[in-house]
Length: 266
Image 1 (cartoon, rainbow, N blue to C red):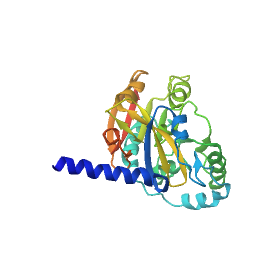
Image 2: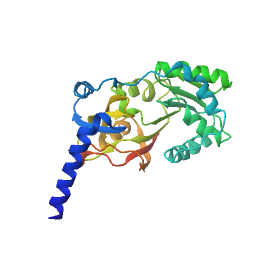
Image 3: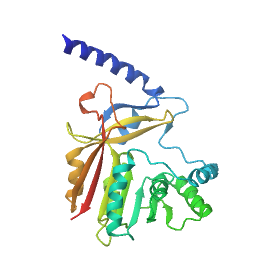
Image 4: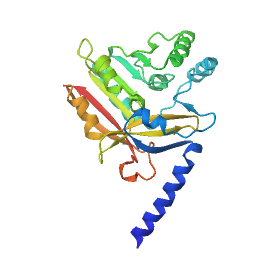
């Protein structure tokens, strides 16, 4: 009887979350086989964008003021920076590629409490890059830069970005893993949706109640296997209890805790 009542309650919750999806701050809906299919199924919400909004160019001064003072670490950065410390201790001149690093907050958070100032490149969308490089110039930071392209680096770092890139595997193969010099020696990832119940699939996210985004929900073995098949070994794996993707009517393949992973070249 308890199982029946629990199933009925979950069914009612799923109906609510499914219908409330267009008005939620962060929510997920649907299981799809392609980014295109997911976008075709997005609700026709007035004023809602399909994909990211360009970073407004007048945000420059806000970024500069924010990063003039120390930046507090967030919980998901502690394991990431633990491994970054360990790697840079062995190779202080290593270059960091921060894929999907937004306004560079990982750089500022890391260097706020660390004497090490590694060469750090944030790879982002064009609107972020133009503001980011203007900020770097104004703050007179010599070891931080922004670019739209992945370039050979010693350390590939990324937080909650891989899942939103349709051609992520092609990008990694072309620029980060198999580039001249053998690719990145270390890969540090956090806030990645992994599950073990089914193959990698795609869902749709209402992000910040501003835009709809398709994203991958990766199969754990497939995700890790991509890197191990290219000469990396998994050094560490941890759970991120702050991010989740609960998909109405698909609770069995939803992700209730995202993951972090550290790989190194064998």
